Amino acid sequence: EAQVTQNPRYLITVTGKKLTVTCSQNMNHEYMSWYRQDPGLGLRQIYYSMNVEVTDKGDVPEGYKVSRKEKRNFPLILESPSPNQTSLYFCASSFSIGEKLFFGSGTQLSVL
Amino acid sequence: AQSVAQPEDQVNVAEGNPLTVKCTYSVSGNPYLFWYVQYPNRGLQFLLKYITGDNLVKGSYGFEAEFNKSQTSFHLKKPSALVSDSALYFCAVRDAGANNLFFGTGTRLTVIP
Image (cartoon, rainbow over all chains, first blue to last red; front, side):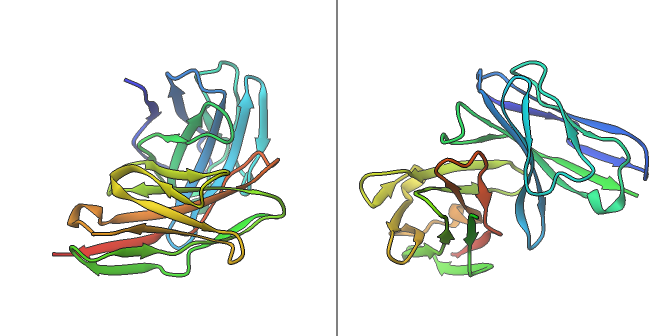
């Protein structure tokens, strides 16, 4: 089944403790992206990747890192999480930037 | 710079009535326009897109959207609403030549039985 898989689904952590949210797609997509969803703000793009080893900042990249060493994986790294990073995070992928996005099920992150 | 506005946070419609969810956009070049739907505890799902061609775009689940260049709008429509259409709807825009997609703040649609 074609899908984007994110893990974990729920995560509660404390300020400053490094964490990684994994994202994997099995559709051989070139384009991958991370978004955060906050009430009243909609989805805001954190980082995106046009292909392996090619990443770029979105609208809200501060406090986040990404890597794209393999085509299928695009992990989101929070080196030192803070409470303002409490949010619902979505990974998405597509064949190319102009094509429809396939979204993961989301990761609800709470930073205490 | 690109931007998209969904002026209504909430839209209520009776089952069987037509529905419209509004979206306006701003881009410097030609727009790529999308609608996505989010059901509770789920990721977003693609409904339809406009790149070029016919201004009326048909999508999944009986939805359609009309591209209006002069009004810079891309409203989502359905002739007869179902209770199962109740969800959060997002409009998104990409400026041709840009590498990112910009989402609106979302409109919660409630279809009343």
